[in-house]
Image 1 (tube, rainbow, N blue to C red):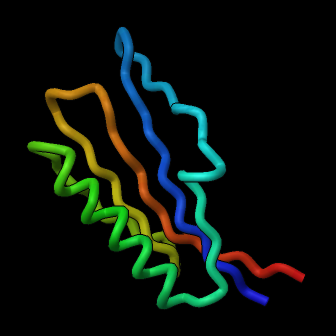
Image 2 (image 1 turned 90 degrees about the horizontal axis):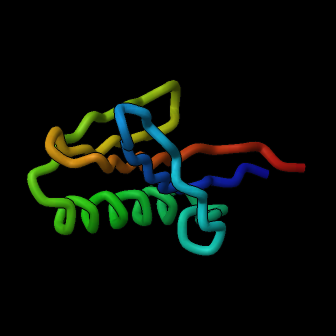
Image 3 (image 1 turned 90 degrees about the vertical axis):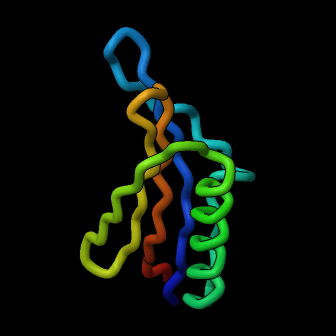
Length: 90
C-alpha cells in the first residue's frame, strides 16, 4: 500500500547558522492514502503560507515524483519547506 505524506518544516537563522525547528507530529505531518487528497492538502498549506508570509520568494523542488516548495524571505530569518512524498508500507 502506498501512503502520501505532506510535511511542513520550519527553519530559522541565528548568527549565520540555520537551525531546524522541531517537527510537531500533530500539525506538521499529515498522512493520506489517496494521492489527490494529499495534493489538495499540499496546495492548501502552500496557499496558507503564501497568504500569511509577506514578501516571500518561492523555489519549487521536484525530486523524482515528489513535490516540494521552499518559501523564504531575504530579509527574514525564517523559511518554510513543504513536501509531498510517498512511501510504500506493508
